[in-house]
Length: 261
Ligand code: GLP
Image (tube, rainbow, N blue to C red; front, side, top):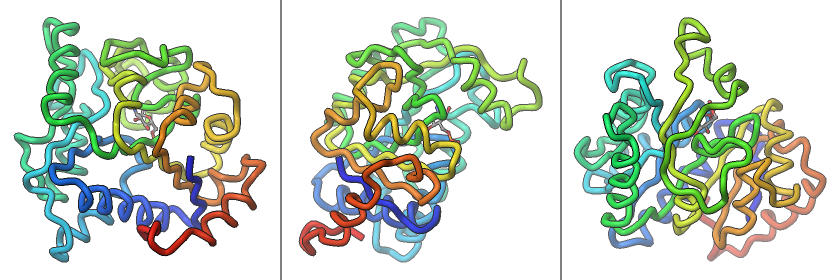
């Protein structure tokens, strides 16, 4: 696991966007794994700037979002379909037909989950999966004690997650209780995983992910088993890490040919 500590949240976005661009340049048919939430917004802003500058073309790239609420209309402004369209597809000038979000409004939710898994593998698998992290260590909506080998499925949201996400809705009652999320096994199949976190509220979850035991109580800790996991943090999110100095030393001495930012 590579841990990169940046001076501020914007630099987190710049470095992580550079990683995404590098993976896209290295693969013939790159497939992006998208996350919602506030954490990856700076990545999307930096990628949009690259698209604007003509340095990056994502118009023929397939993309798959991690998750979607169940029981929320697709056209609701806070459905992840709407959020991804607004924050990713449009600013990155992607083809809406190639940007996929699980169908949380499907009548047969199990069939929708299976179809999503199939679509990912038919596209060739995810090249780089962008991830934020919940304050309870969730990735996607894989709440604590999620199976490490889980695939896309329906999950009940933890109350803490509903409270964290209440800010996007007018009341707690409006926050859905269920979601459709890629599983931890699905996420681990991506060829690269890229987790970003900013702010002190994420410090405990980040410390458990990077330095804690691998335990389903902190679902993101499974990333310790990924061959190519990159974690990009601001100082506040990194504040709970014991080996902070070591990560900074390693990054400062990273060979030039391995650098992407
Ligand atoms: C949400 C999403 C996750 C996201 C996390 C953190 O509920 N399902 O994909 O990483 O919670 O959100 P934020 O980045 O806004 O803190």
